[in-house]
Image (cartoon, rainbow, N blue to C red; front, side):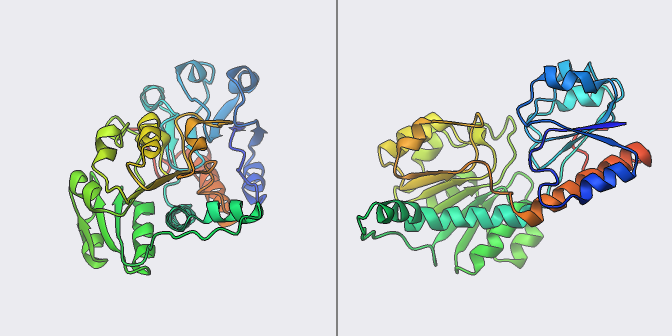
Length: 316
């Protein structure tokens, strides 16, 4: 029973997930994250499970995997997996929605602080011998907008309380109980966009959220505001963001995610008021180990125990 893994971070810090698979009688086939279908094809006929990061799991791939029972996303977003096609074939699709919530929330707040205090600019200019005097922006006491008050967004809100921030939130499925307990105010998307000093995105990429922050939405932001995206690249229209930042229509932005990854260059990289990182928000030793173990347990539940695994994302 083969398990194909194309996530480069699977079992990176702890071999226990691999040991568990082998103890359960599975053969792990580790392939690069960008492995083409031709590299997967020799193994697919015997594959019962996949652990994927960004591999495009589409109808063409599924047609070559008659024994496939489960596709585990080594993370949260499943926009690279055809949910309809997997459902039609009776293949479970799972994710791990909360194992890296602290890591991503920490990173989101790091980007907020970096953008506000211009830490990256200060570091680069100091290394170059310039000894800059950078007058930046406070975070303490400002208004934070959280779009997507789910597992990660909630953790960002809890961190914001330590900075005495007023927190506005927008969510398609609002958790009013959590909001009431933590002094969070739900607001319309327009009101949040217009009133917040920092806006951080924690929403999946869907038809509703694609290009959620386009030219019209960004134009509603304060000129002094910052936009932080650690969700999915398609949630922000990158061309519109470039134009806004170039015109100083907003103070700055940071993104850990992009429409197309990996990237060697991008127009946004040329801007001093933009901070890019390489989709690493969830990459800590603790988070990666927990995600790997969860994926393995989902595979065991589905294949060996023949039970419905947890965190199923399609409609099976």
